[in-house]
Image 1: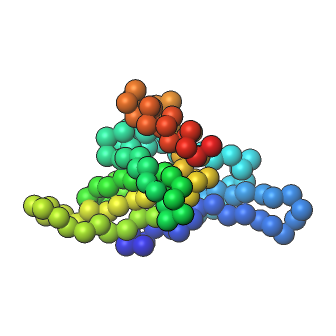
Image 2: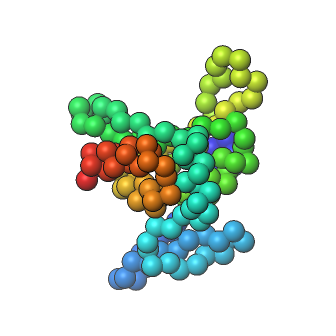
Length: 142
């Protein structure tokens, strides 16, 4: 990844019978969680996604609909903060187009379980138009 971001901040200990889930703290230590998905800075993430993100409903190669969440920004620090808060998806450099002077970063999440968790976590903080898109996307996914 171009930002040197961690590929995952979720760790699963399978050494015991019970599945234990750990989240990486900002200081690098691990903290055991109940396994429930939690977005740090949820209001900030929802606001950024409301303004810069999109919910794309596409046809997968098998013909079924697929929901992909996308966010694009030219600010590396904003993308890193967003990615570390959400913990899912991938960040890549997007191609320069038009009169852009800065290289944009593109985050995308398309894995069904991850998209559902992200949308469930931020849906109540979104505006009416975006909430309608979330409702439609979740109907497709569930």
